[in-house]
Image (cartoon, rainbow, N blue to C red; front, side, top):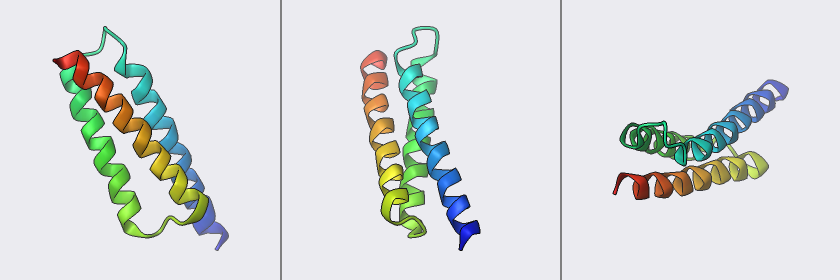
Amino acid sequence: MEKKFDFTVNITSKALQKAWELMKLANDPNINAEELLVFADKKIEAFTGLLETGIFTGAAKEEIIEAKKIAIMAQRVIKRRVE
């Protein structure tokens, strides 16, 4: 059980970290917005896939949901840059 807990904590921590990194990059004018938009789409799909596995429950599930929300917010910022 502890191994599963370590696994889920590691995954959720990385998911949140990647989502915040994406948010920081969303406003960076030195980053190609179209390429970043593709990356954001893939991150959102990955977070959705993690949620669909059913492995994550409780606080871990909430962290993945939070990461997905952050990624969606970043995606919206990036879309505005592309337009």
